[in-house]
Image (cartoon, rainbow, N blue to C red; front, side):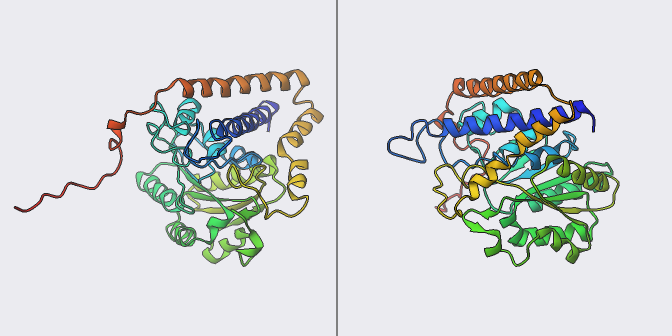
Length: 334
């Protein structure tokens, strides 16, 4: 890895963190003093991924715009790393007409065909579409790959096992990435999963299974590079589980009463961004001046996206059924 590549990864991590911190602030607008999930600038739930930047950046760095990615109800970090239009993404989160889906999907349903990104609020829903994309790529005879991101709780869904089985059976170019952030909503991994590492489940399907500890972007980068290259070369799927941490709650407003004393503090002490910054500076790959320039640049990029979203109009109610699935009209027999 070159210094330029490392700085680019660091900048992307800083952009994601700045965006998530900004969304945390904006989310409470109009929701105080009486909280209403439907009120405010951002209606609906909000699941933020601050702390999980190494997963998105380490994996997506090796993807092309034409590669397909499916993500989860906590999608912003992956969407940004994949290159989703930040302005239109923000407008979608705000429920505005200039959003990716015309303001109808919100933050859990972001779709950007330009970079082949999609996500879903349904746990485990991204696995089958990723396998379907990989099958289409194989039939087309090109070297595109698909990557499915999901949380460790989703690895207990039937869609995970069915998708992994078919991908292995058909030798498809797909990589499964499990983000182990310790909790499925409020349930600790040990309370929901019979084994310590979901990556061990890969052996049952005859594919490589790799576990990346420490929320380390460089370790993720190395493992992802090999898995994606393997998929492009026609060598089939890989299952990767990555240890990470969510520095906000499961959702904004989560009281996090299920956490052990000091658990969140320990995660913050191991924040991956300051650790990466320190490593870059020790290698003389980043100066204090360059760090300040990066901070200013990402702050402006996020501010521009927020301004774009605020200036976008709310959708006209008459378009409510446009671009969505609707039940066909049934004629009444006379």
